[in-house]
Amino acid sequence: MGVWNPDQGGDARMLIGMDVGGTNTDLAMVGEEIVSEKVSNTRGIREALLKIRIPGRLAVSTSTPLNRVLAGTPVTVQTILVPGPGLFWPGGVKGAVNHCGDVVEPIDPQEIREILMRDRGDALAIAGKFSVRNPALEKEIASLAHAQYPVERTSMSYHLADLDFPGRIATTRLNAAMKETVTWLAGEIGAERGDVLFFKGDGGLIPPGYAVNNPSVLAHSSAAAVALGARYLSGITDCTVIDIGGTTTDLVPLLRGVPRMELLVHGGERTVTRAVVAQSFPYGGDSLVEGGLLPRRLGDALAFGGSHPTLTDALNVTGEEIGDAAASRRLSRESATSVIETYLDRISRAVSSIGTRHLVGAGYLAPFLVPGIASRCGVRYTIPPHWDCANAVGVAVSRVSLSLHARFDSGRGWVAFNGEHQPLRSMGDDDALVGICKEEVQKRAIAAGAHPEDVRDIEVLHVHSYDVIRGASRSSRIADVVVQVAPGITVKAP
Image (cartoon, rainbow, N blue to C red; front, side, top):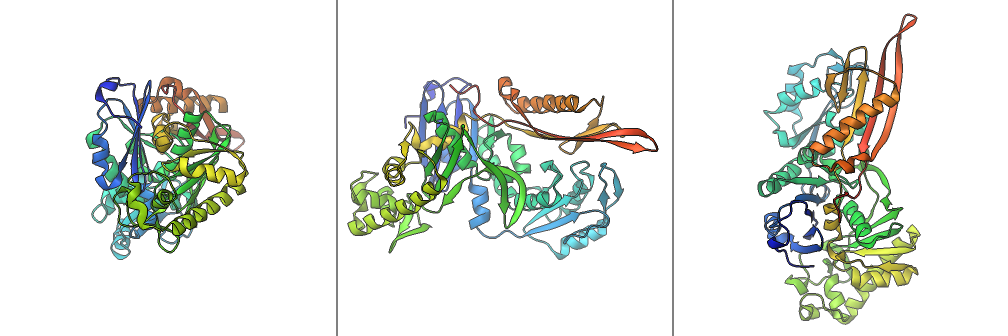
């Protein structure tokens, strides 16, 4: 832990991380030393922000928007699709952009208005089959819809820069459900801090505007944050990070310092959003003890002023000293021992199924529970310094990581970067096009706050090009390229 001292850092190079979890908001300041603090969410996000009285880059991770979709009041999303001629999708309307990015059929404004009035939901998702090559029809529909849906409840698919139409539809629906919460968070945080970035579920940072347009990238961000923080604090690259928070316990395997990624699935639909692979269990320090250990949270532990016994209180009854240990004595020793055994059994079975040889503990209960899990599994364990705020440390030391989808069309003389057209000066071979994309994504990342050395590592995710033949000769060339600044730890981290 430590004390937040404004005299400790009048240095704009300070890296500040903030992870908004289900129970607490964790803060970490990384400079020559690391200082961390935990703030209860009952005090509000503004209270946590007021704790940060030093200059520097603030990076924020939060699982709140997705959790509200999963566990909050259901959000009804109206979907309007522009699939194009010959393709029939529920919610499909007249209009088409062809594979070259030309509008070959306009939308019918009256049809859109009637659909909006007939099927109105809480939020609106708009997706066109080739909108990543020309977003004109999506934007026109959004303009017609703003009388019924404000901007913060309207999501368009062209921001996703991915040709996978079914995946983009699923992602845009999820974005529409999350967007209002992310917009609110960006506003709340931005009102207090100017230099703010959001942490993605793949371990990189993006500006707030990117997060508002594509909120799904924040999914699993807390798991990605704790993985990066545990690696940074422990120096261990092959392990399973076990993060024991107030609401959940998360397991994140690392191989050569990198967690495995997969496409996010929501509501049974595969999205185009890549996120860290993590196993999450609904048990943490604030899990209710009532006839056993329950996957429910009704507030803080008795030891921290709550009104119901929890797993934290069970640990106190068996001899630990966490918070006001005396307040935990409402729980019997028999019940306490039983729920601890239940927790250790469940998590140990999951750890054993992964096949890891080394656990790195994080979260405020890690020193009290990880040794028992490791013993049952027969593996080594490490509890690094600042284990209780490893997620905030991971957010602080991460680097800006933007992705770019480019569509080159020499016949039409343009290139579309993430759906926005620019004149095409020249059309070289594939290596030349990849070079153009690398330069463009580097420029965008630096403009978003990346250190120039952080943008040297560019991942080439996709390259495909072909010639267009008319008659007996080549008339033009078309290429699709996707690149990304690799996520990871910034060179600015001490």
